[in-house]
Image (cartoon, rainbow, N blue to C red; front, top):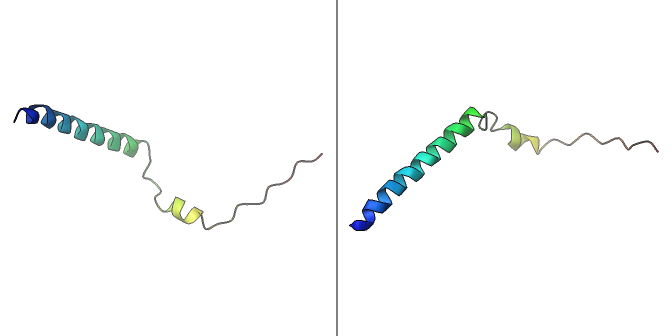
Length: 53
């Protein structure tokens, strides 16, 4: 029972940190384009021009 006195506040604090991290990522635009990265792998890159010597 004594361990609950320590574990319960730690669990609540870690849950709060997870919520803060999620909201921070949401404001930073991390979840704006979820399909872009998945479809970007299908397109070829433009060929690079070699520098002149």
